[in-house]
Image (tube, chains in turn cyan, green):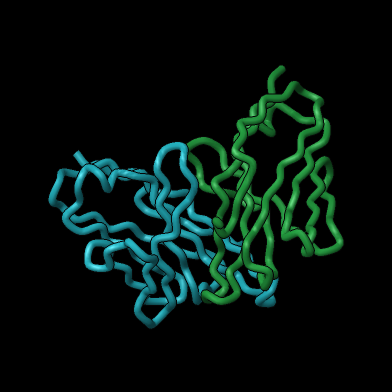
Length: 118
Length: 111
């Protein structure tokens, strides 16, 4: 159980284009999903927290107009990188939270999306 | 002080060795603690949760010291397949219970 999928697994795009990444919880409902970014040899950096039916909460320094997040249902969240630049090239990973109870909640990660912007 | 700090590593150990990783966290109200494992170019995978009384799963033992705000992971009888980056994860009770990841400790087990 607790499987999270991401699509696409990798994408190459030209500068200035927009890229949409989907994150799905396959066998559970996730009221909260998280989007992370990881540069080579660095740790995961939380970009934003996405709650179903409400606006995402962005971490300091993350441009909400550039990284659009939509959490339309309890099993799907999308991240759209708008007007992509080469410095946006990174490994984007989503996770979904399974809460049972709150103090023991666990995050399950999608397989990640490797974005390369030319 | 960073929210979660780990040994920088890297740790290079021979097969069969015992290796320990340490992690400190800054928020005394944190209640959830985890160790994740991340292989190169893959997503993190939950290795084990860390409970107050300490817990063991096969060759892996996790300890929590609330007074010192310290978490540890001990790996006994290291295998080549244990080579990975180990991430310490702590919840932030004041921020929607979000999780914060340590920078990770790289372990390489050599034959």
